[in-house]
Image (cartoon, rainbow, N blue to C red; front, top):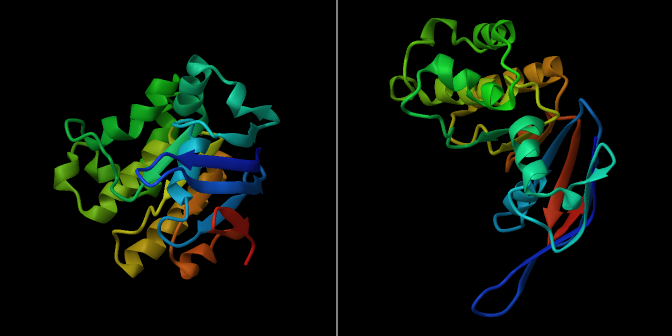
Length: 219
């Protein structure tokens, strides 16, 4: 469902243009999982921003089910961000003024796809059924990340983009949360691209690649 061809991105700096992506190629089938690794500054977050339609590439193409993302206008890009993708960040990014139930449903409501039965199922699977009336500040880090995963999956997006989703958790919590994420992504019928620094976590996904000097390498 996702094909990236010769993707390029350059940023202006005081020292001159900085080419971060120099021709990235990758492909991700529907329902598949891909771990993206690479040292800090290699362009992993830049690539996620381009895939999410938060920024535009300077060259190359991103194809979503064969349709080039670079031809999307602003309204179509907004719809892609709202309906086509689910985002999971290291720092959770929950809405502090909303309780767990409202945070879980937030993305799905924006996408016009709120399914109370699916959200209730996600809450049960993620161990949140007894916490629905709590607010983010009343949750542990692991619980907050579970809410973030549920929110990302509530709309059953085509693509889940996860940026170091367990980076702030201890190893045991990290393994548990990642296992839940991958199980639920499969049940939602979504594909997942996860940025991680951990070879141990990367090994849990079906495909692995490394971003190095602006290009993708398969280890």
